[in-house]
Length: 309
Image 1 (cartoon, rainbow, N blue to C red):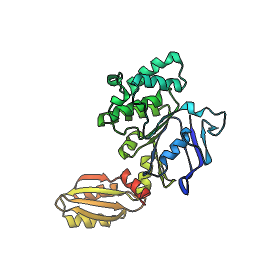
Image 2: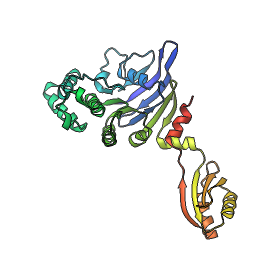
Image 3: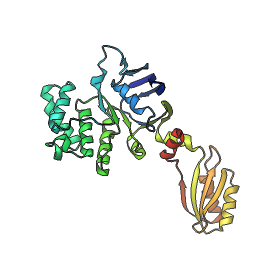
Image 4: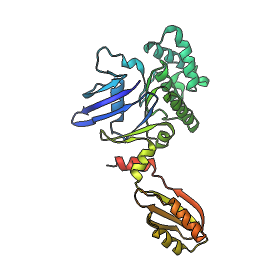
């Protein structure tokens, strides 16, 4: 089920939390929704889920506006809020049964759905405990289970791996990737490696405005511009190597990084690659090329450049 966001705006007093944004999410896509604290992520997600109202613009889910009085869009959404509110005095199974009933799951199917969620979210060992007796990581798993208990077509997950240990994070990432093959998933997180491991596309919001939208690779290419290579060239004089590299017509600038290790950095001319010419140069000069590594712009650097105040 697709989501279309059209000219969406939300203000809190004089401050615009979300400023006339537009984007869409397709079925079978996991969208990483990034931004610094206060950028407008949670506000946008709350409007998509119907948790708070829309000030201006529209949200269309499956082609229907969420403002339509006859819309049943909430039945199609599973939502894990940032703070994961839970009834701590309730046992896990009772809580999931309660959530399933609230979400309209047929009574005959509730027990099967509970068993499936307990297995999917790794709650087997803890299933007979009260929620208040669980660690933060297991409470997060209960939150995920309640978001999925009614098998929604859309999942809105705000910081879903908060409090999980590394093993749990890997399991939940795999679960989200698998769910994303058939559902529409919006995932908000501050853990940037998690975005690369889980998401098909990244959307970055800052001060209520969308500042980037694309795959991790597309964003890197846009940010990086010129090709940058790290080289290790042996069996030649360092100064001669450096001079020869700078003489190549595809090289904008070559620098010596480490004299003792014969390590160089080469920046290519815009829209040009120097790899083949460097290789041919080494063959011609009978130098040994032991390393040639393209240096990628890190997602952290892209995020910082786009959101720094």
